[in-house]
Each structure stands twice: as C-alpha cells, then as structure tokens.
Amino acid sequence: MALDRMSDIVESAHTVPGAYEYMLSQMNPWPRLAVATHFPVADDIVECAYNSVRKHFPTGSYPEFGKDIIWPTDLMVV
Image 1 (cartoon, helix red, strand yellow):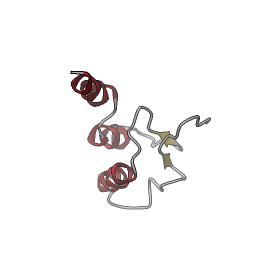
Image 2 (tube, one colour):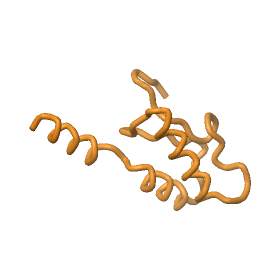
Image 3 (cartoon, rainbow, N blue to C red):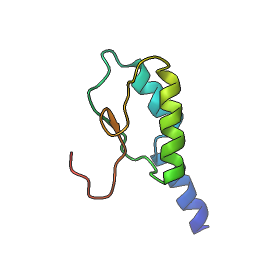
Image 4 (cartoon, rainbow, N blue to C red):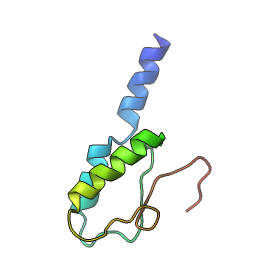
C-alpha cells in the first residue's frame, strides 16, 4: 500500500517530460534559462527528456543543455 501511494505521488507531483518540452516550445520569446523543477533527474530520464525537448526545436541550437536548459539537483541555488 505504501509503495502504491508513493508511486501515485511521484506520478502526479512531477512534470512529465512531454509536458515540459511542450510548455518550453510554446514560450515566445524563449527563456534565456529554463530550469525544470519537480522533475525526476535520473540520468536516463534527463537524456531522454533533453532529446525530446530538442525535437520541439528542430532548427538552430536552442536550447543548449547546461546553458539554456538545466535540470535541478538537490540543494541547487539559482
């Protein structure tokens, strides 16, 4: 029961990658820095999410990982 509750919280409290990149692609002008918060930051998720973000921006170099877009870490200060 506890694992089911934890799973529900994670799935409802974190931004899914598809929603994040869609919201980013709809902004005009594009932000100079986008920081995903409440985003699961496991290596495989970040790589997949960044690749998905890039699909929303097929031309040019925006967003450049580490410059225009960053993922949060524990105790991160922006």
